[in-house]
Image (cartoon, rainbow, N blue to C red; front, side, top):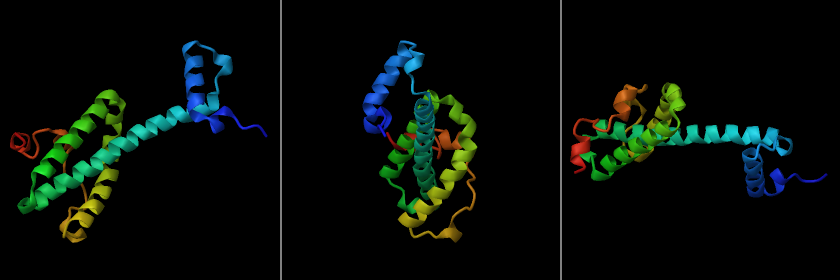
Length: 150
């Protein structure tokens, strides 16, 4: 059984498929694998967004629950994760429709990370995310955090 180019040299397959798409050479398109790869790009974008929310929500929780341990590093992380999220949403605005689901999933991961990184345990942490989306994405929340970076 001959191995397809998709299986034997993925990079070359992507180059050839993109050339065929650009030249509207429909006959040579590997439509099944092409459709799967395009779908996987969307899943990858969503996973990347969820990863940034995991970190951001974890740091927001630590910021509010451990004020005595606040650090410049936490501020920088909160700011940079927000900016990454905002860039992804700018490039893929349809992901905004998925934010409540992504935040719910990310919050569970954030709780786990906070328990690993701190002395807090499950009973010390809010079970559900109480931050509204607007607040999570607000570069000035917690109040003054953007000014503290200066």
